[in-house]
Image (cartoon, rainbow, N blue to C red):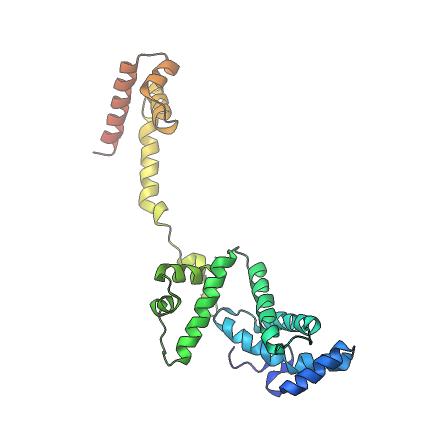
Length: 258
């Protein structure tokens, strides 16, 4: 993506460069209602959009989409810029472009992430690029956290939060005949074959109990009632409930050869 030249049908290597004087003159003509000057001003500042996109390279899914969104921010900057102020146009335009891109990323993501977390994540990405520019090739999370004066856990959490979710039906391998999906690589250790067999065996053991014993176990372990409450509902004494419960549990243990 870093080497992509043609974006949205525009050869970015051929974009014109405007001097400060050119920009000031075009801004003046634009405010006077000159549509041609406005177009020249927008096209001449598209390099600002490209410079902003480099901040989001690590998480860009579609450079064309973000370029268009950035251009929307640029157009807003052109239309709202006050030429009476002693401010460079780029100083005003870049935050407008950044804000438009961040808004797009925030609203288009299928997973809602708070603005605070996103801001930390984007700041971490920018810090990573700065560290690389300083000559550090393999930038670690700890180096980023130290530079931002944050904990490693917080930086890692925020970066993970802005990752795009992956579909369970996303192919991870294809040999030309059959695809291996993400869901094929997931193992549910909480519902393995051994546990399933134990559940079946437990059900069989419970079915071998007397009806009253099954009723007592249901009320005690499924409904969470005390022996006194069970005795009142079943119509027997608490001592009888206790004896029947112990007998039922003992039979189940014997069934499992405990």
